[in-house]
Image 1: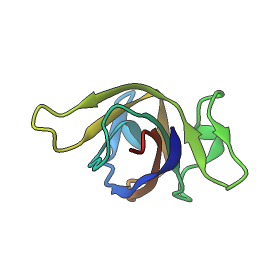
Image 2: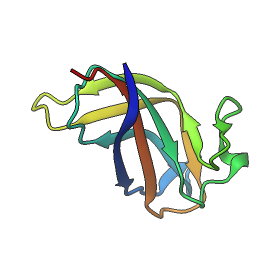
Image 3: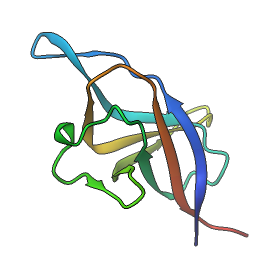
Length: 111
């Protein structure tokens, strides 16, 4: 198994109503195109500076690169095989609806 970068993608986020007020953006799923083997373990790193630590769940760790590392709860391949949807084990709350830059890494088999 080799740990390598799969993709960098930008996730457009939209304001989500929370308790009746559109004040935060909630991200719970990320869809990316994965040209590699879809059967891989994936880590997702949020590097958007608009994400603030007080909006993150306690089990989201800020790693030494300054990016937020979130574990993936489930990994679902599209019916058409066009990409993957990553379901996070917690949602991320943002203060704005700006695009989020996401780095996707995975442990993949190299033949």
